[in-house]
Amino acid sequence: MLQAWSTARTLAMPREVRFLQSRQNRVGYPSSMILVTGGMGFIGLHTARALREAGARVMITRHRVERMPDFLRGDPEVVVEPLDVGDAGAFARLGDRHRIEGIVHLAAHLGAGDPIDAARGALASIINVLDAARSWRVKRVTFASTIGVYAGVRELPYREDAALPIASPHFIPCVKKTWEITAAQIAGRIGVEAIALRLGGFWGPLKTSRNAMPSLLAHAAARGEPVDLGQLLFDEPTADGGYDMIYAEDGARAIATLQLADRLVHRAYNVGAGRITRNRELLAAVGELVPGFAVELPAAAVPRLDAEHLDITRLQGLGWAPRFDVRSGMERYLAWLRAGNPW
Image (cartoon, rainbow, N blue to C red; front, side, top):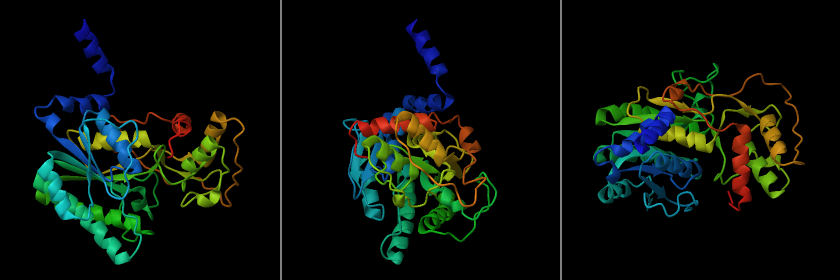
């Protein structure tokens, strides 16, 4: 009877969860792990959690920042190692100490400081990742690209097979395009799968900055602080401003799905909600959850009928679907902040 209950429970799981958890039963799997570069970052920590929930052992790297949320602290299947992704020797030494079967490359390159040094470091990191993957006989590398690579593409929603302009409006999409081109040229020749993760706007707990509308509103509502729209970096401070925003736990599960899938047929996958989230939706959710909270956002000078969002058909084909909408995600985010967590 217990066996029948277990079988029924397994069949009731989403297909995405079933094929991820099936990896735990492979011979030799418990001795290997997935390396997450930038593992102490906002997306990295959520990705580590999603990989653990899928049954994978995880190594997260730290460089300038070290923090460990409660959901990972004390987990014997999570290993923390120092790593500068620009240091090829440091990569090699990780392989001497651990058996690594996959790499999720999320370490950020923001282009600060001298532009030559920034470009050199960004290019070195993807080369070091691919070199390490070859040395360790890793099957798959997934690496963070961005919705920003579509800048200049007119057709919406953005599809992975769209022709990308060479020009980039910012250092980050420039770097990500460079990574995609470099990986596409090198990976097949060295026997490694290199999969670009074209990430939409992740939001939720552990984001240290308040330069995006979801985090700005959540922190203000949770702590009773005024909303300073001047902190916004790229977000349009109007009621109808918006773009493809994905709650971080959903986005991390998507990354884990792509890293652990038995077979992938494409070299790039969009990771987003597949829809536009307007600022007025965020405001409505926070206002419902925190009575009395209100922010006046002006109407756009020129109403936008559409905004940046991703076609997620490829991702959905792997059995993934978001679990959080705007309200449930914001409710979870506010609870996290009210519990005393600083981010």
